[in-house]
Image (tube, rainbow, N blue to C red):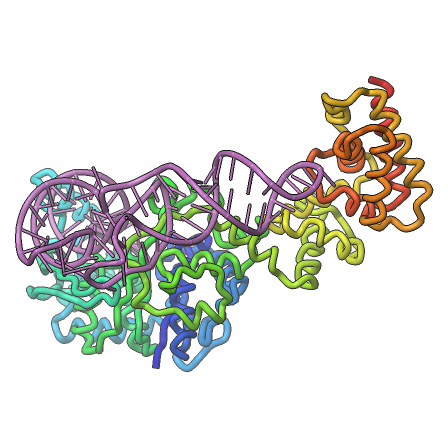
Length: 484
RNA sequence: GCCCCGUUGGUGUAGUGGCCUAACACGCCUGCCUUUCACGCAGGAGAUCACCGGUUCAAAUCCGGUACGGGGUACCA
């Protein structure tokens, strides 16, 4: 039975890198009919952030990465929050102490610091030498005096190796690893101890996590052995780097998962894109439904090197999803966006039917959903701002533009139903009568109607805008030109 | 410093010893379509597969070294 877990620390926002790891976890579980478990690793009280867990859960839910067991829904191995599992860790630590695999240590942070400094000064690798080891009795006495005591793991003098599913055998010399802390002075376990115990107790089959964990895996291997546990399979997935090839961080702009939601990215597009960072199906297909990705996903095809995050390609993929999206759904999400207040990337629109006829006009121009407000803006504003210079193309005289616009309003007045094909025929005829090229007439009209040089096809815009508004805007443009 | 992991056009990937005169996608450029933008379509530029050496009849693919990049070296995860 495949059981994988995503085990974030609630110390900040969920980032793209973490999200990608979660995606691989989830994909692997789904591909193998396994279980996906969410476990919150909140053993660091100093860095703990209350909102973080909420953000993490929201991010995963947004992407549709649903879990089978977790802190919110429980499961057969609850609790799924490490801070609630202290008793379990304590028992296991006691076992370790009893069989001499771990010891109490009374060295103070100051002592540790000076030891480290001395070692660095002498150009020897900074490593703890076990000087603070004390007996259980001494530890108890110290604690009652209010002094700090930790528990350290006694690293055995043996060669350590483990098999990484992506990279193969990895070897470490025991000299590289010093006696590390497994229980902190606040009686919280460290990550190393806690996750080993939990992965075992929760019957995790595959530990899928970021590459940054490779160097500490020997400790985990040792811990598994000392505790008498079996081993999970290790899968260290490549990191995601920023444009400058450094680990993705705040420097690279808003990269928290939820910020992509705010920016108008579709969850299915983000998922698809992220799945392709460090993995590929092998046949060069890129746009894939979630079902397809699950079907094709395998650990063997995960790459062993980091990938640079390219926001431009993400944007392309997002736009591609928007283009092929079901109309009803597109209407829905565009409306959701533009119904937001004006200051919040919306247009304050209350009536959904207003959007339905406009969706086809902006669909292929939309890269991100929150671009909708800009693209739709001129359909809804009452006082369109017009850059007067743009009304006069260089190749056309002021007079002929005025005449063209005037005739246009007259023409519009006569037409009953504004159908694009009909409009186009009539306006082309008008241009011909006035001895103007189509563009010479259409361009000023476009500016008058939209205030912009680019827009959806003119006559579709006219139709959407309606007769009254179109005439009104053209009249206004004529007045502007006359004043020039 | 020490340890570990990597290295195919700017970016993501394909490639698992001969089909590689290196494929696909994003981006970039040109043209077509068109009333503009976008979409779409047709082309193009861009990689001596990090470098050096070895194995082999044959290497992007296997081995070694070097360089470069990344990660780790905490009472953080």
